[in-house]
Amino acid sequence: MKRFAIIAPADSSSAARMLAEPHRAALAGGVDLLDTLKQNLAAPDELVNLKALGGLDRIERAPGGGLRIGPLVKLSQLAAAPDVRARHAALADAANAAATPQIRNLATVAGNLAQRPRCWYFRNPDIVCLKKGGTKCYAVAGLNRYHAILGGGPSFIVHPSNLAPALVAYDATLTILAPDGERQLAIADFFTPPTIDPRRENILTPGRIITAIEVPAPLANAGAAWLEAREKQSFDWPLVSVVAIIALNHAGVVEYARVVMGAVAPIPWRAPAAEKILLGARLDRDLATRAAAAALAGAAPLAHNGYKVPIAKALVRRAILRAANLADEPA
Image 1 (cartoon, rainbow, N blue to C red):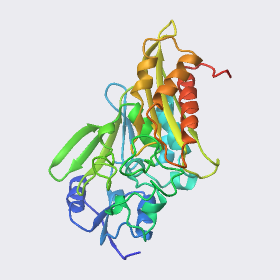
Image 2: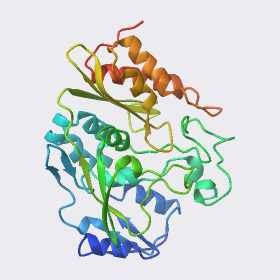
Image 3: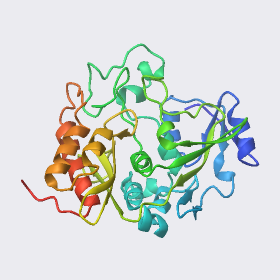
Image 4: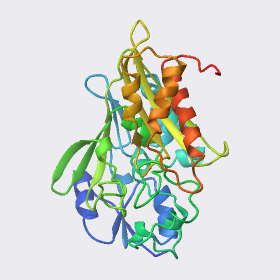
């Protein structure tokens, strides 16, 4: 690992200007950054210490009943916050399941969104894959058990963020600060698919930093559920995760539906085909099953990850029914 210096910005604007300079990287929780430094995926001369900035580690009520989440909020803090658990339970559950208690006490919300993929070819310092500027995604014909079944190509990584599917489902908005000013964008527009640029996962080019995440107030009659499947219950990355938000009217008809999957695609993967089947229909297990099939209709698994398709279908069905507070009885 290359030696580096740590510099402290006076405020967010100076941090953005510092990070626009070459050979610098942002330091927040530092969990994924330390891994990339050890694996020679990054070799900055200086780290800009964002932890020195005040006011970015708070969770506050926003106008209209939503939440404003600072980028330096820890995952453990997010999972335990009463306002988050009461009003955006799927987000709290996603934060609470990430990594281990020790990592959740260090890792930040913005860091979770901006972390690099965990593909073993990308993480191997001796392999120059497509994501590192090479010409080939080695997962296509290689070890692809944990890779994308939706939206893959030319790179087949899966996005590693636990929080991203939940924040997409809740229609969160990010505030991005750059040296030339500040702007807001829907979180779904934050992520960069490999068809646009296989070397990147998001729009955070040098000099851009996340300064806030705003989550709107949930619908009064909506329920939410977050589910995941892992190979082991201790520290592990999800094989598939699903967030569903469902609102029913008094007759049990779906008035609002949002279904987003994680660990199946290079970006958080929304399933509009599933949502279309649900809207305007009376929800039961059969409808949820048909919606789950629609969510995976475009799946194109590689040689070793086809098992993700039935797992994803089952989790989508269960999440839809759980969000609506309906039992998922066996067929």
